[in-house]
Image 1 (cartoon, rainbow, N blue to C red):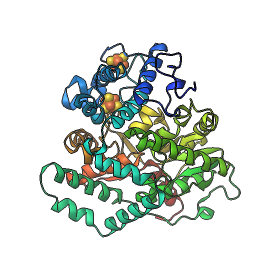
Image 2 (spheres, rainbow, N blue to C red; image 1 turned 135 degrees about the vertical axis):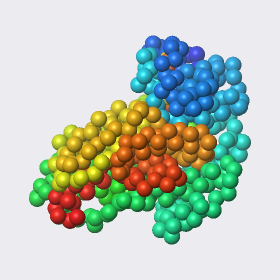
Image 3 (cartoon, rainbow, N blue to C red; image 1 turned 180 degrees about the vertical axis):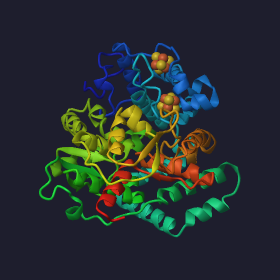
Image 4 (cartoon, helix red, strand yellow; image 1 turned 120 degrees about the vertical axis):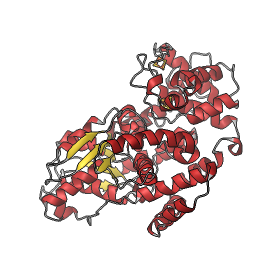
Length: 464
Ligand code: SF4
Ligand code: SF4
């Protein structure tokens, strides 16, 4: 019997046998295996409740079932086949989780909540047809789109065109009332926010911008433009490219529109996430690089977990682990190199760390090093930096009330800093916070931290 087909209860309920890289297994067995693995490693939930105040859905709703501890109870009930995974209770409370993982660093038992949630979402998704899932059709259409680079490019090009024609602004103003109208208004504001009202792009010219004058001396880097980031935030991708080059990296971009599979993993689309991960691993191998770099925190968090995703798959385990060991956020690379200082930039910026950099990658300290390389920049920390902005993919569209409540809190805290712009390192967070600012009539810009360093270099070069 193969590792992929042994029943639960046999000795295969180890962490490795329960990884999503293993195929042809009942998703409930995978969830059960993961929970057993947590127990075996003495990592199980001790019901202390330390995670409750850290959880944005619990803070908004005050319902134990919408807390990490409550969701773990539900997962356990399904894993032990005491609860139907198609039940409203399981479907609703798994669906409402933002996947922000703010519950992980505060947990004294190190419960691997993020990995358990991915398994639980896979169980929930396979238990109910798409048309019956909450927000099912919207999410399913998106997941399918993100698996096909050409179709995705067409869709994102259409979104860019709509943005250039200011159609989202019109849609936001004309959106009707009610739940659907709220979702439409928020989605339109997100697309509008991706345009970056304060962005001042500079034409890429690595020959001119490399201060090292000569061959790069730093690592050879495969830079993932990503799907959403690469298309809607081209200015951020260009800024990252210039900044890495200036700091001595030899940058080669991975294929445009290549998705890392994070959205699929978070939504429980197991096959979709693994297909996309295999494509990215193969691409990086062909490029023969020292590092794989992204400026999207959600993509970085997923790619750092490829090794775990394929742990039970002998054909891919070694390749996936080698790939993950090379993955870095752009700010991590710059912090490791010691960023070249830029020109004086007199601005006040509110920094808000993305959950997938702070909680999932535990790497947001690097951003402070990057911002410290900008003379004159005043950095103000947003209150409660552990709290999610409510982004979580298209959560603001699929859950307008709850996403809106979580987002409103973040927007208030960002505005309370009195800064002229807010910096955060993930496209979903940039769109979520940007949309919230637009909807309250604020003129604050939303930027990626590397954009500020890029602007500082341009000032040093006398371009602005
Ligand atoms: S903090 Fe950890 S151990 Fe405590 S209730 Fe939450 S998940 Fe369980
Ligand atoms: S991932 Fe975020 S929303 Fe989900 S249980 Fe943990 S803290 Fe709550």
